[in-house]
Length: 104
Image (cartoon, rainbow, N blue to C red; front, side, top):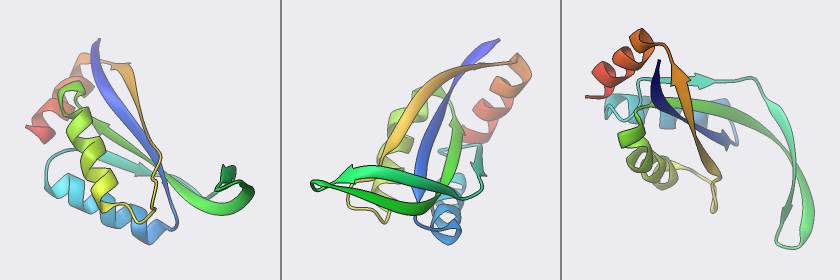
């Protein structure tokens, strides 16, 4: 088993999530992006409780590229303050090798 990184972010629409996904895949910063079904988010923003429908996305990359991928997602993201969380994950060697090959 080998370590990879999984980055999580939410987007205002499936179109925006796909736009960012296509860009980071083309730039080889991620090997795969899973765009999930819509979710309903409740959060505090500028002193008020807000609610919105969002589209979550999971970005799969190497641990070495996680910081660069996070910066790129932030630069492409339509939100003023995008939340981009990174988690180290463990995957089978074949998956880790595939991610390394597709991002290298």
